[in-house]
Length: 377
Image (cartoon, rainbow, N blue to C red; front, side, top):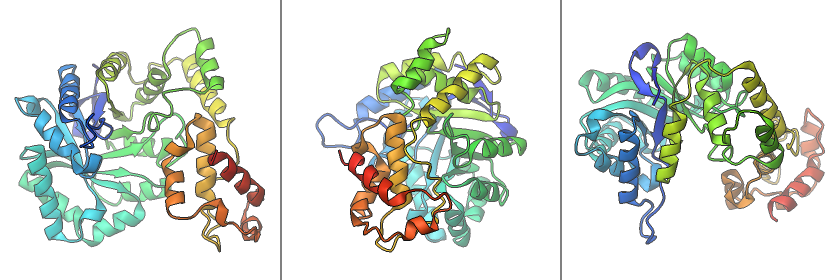
């Protein structure tokens, strides 16, 4: 296992961090998590050298922290640092933050949380956290020894990330990043900004929820033609760890074989070790994925709000994702949300307001109908 220094904190962490969001449910179907299997996987990772474990209050029906706490008995707690999170939906004042932290400490069976994160924030959520005194609460809990580091995980545009990162004294930040997200969310600009500020970065969604683990034909052909043979998973993790600003890459594992494969991969990675021909391969892989794009919608939302409630950019995002990564539309979370909220293209009356507003002059009406037909099989 390779270890990396976490920026200004100066502490060492395993390059592979175990994520506790994707454990399988119990075979009986009575639980969202198979406790004994999850405990076995967590301990297998730690025995293999993993020192960074990530969970959150809301993961797996709010059971993930409890199972992690059980897994860290018998001396395992002393071998790792724990990261968990405070969701904005669960707190509204000082008392609720105190109660939530106490609950999480109890579930994790520990007196101190190492990395405590404001969960999944953008500028709007950050302003909410400030309004209820969360930054001050985190600072006080650091002084009280209940948390070690004040952190946040981020989902939003780069502009929000830049603002939040410089609006408080942060110890660590967690971002979504992979070779397809170089210009999405915090992106490469955000990663490098954090690096310049000495703030360690933990990576989530390094495989885009598994979408980068199985390459479509045109991408696999590039991997197959390259003289060095690696799996799509290994290429993705190798590319991430090539960035010196990256401290830890999170990976959620459901099977012992996945733990073992990750341990092998993260024993071979390093910052700045990819030669030019490998970096060129990853650029070509990205281009091959992007060549599968269905429509050049940038998500600017000038077409919104639709008078009839159609989530136009959301539908186009789902359409592109299903095509790019050759995935099942039924498994696309964004598309499921659109259907549940009744914001599908079946509500379109072809009024033309969207096309008149689109700065790229996309054929939105025709494309919406095509997208909805393909996404619904």
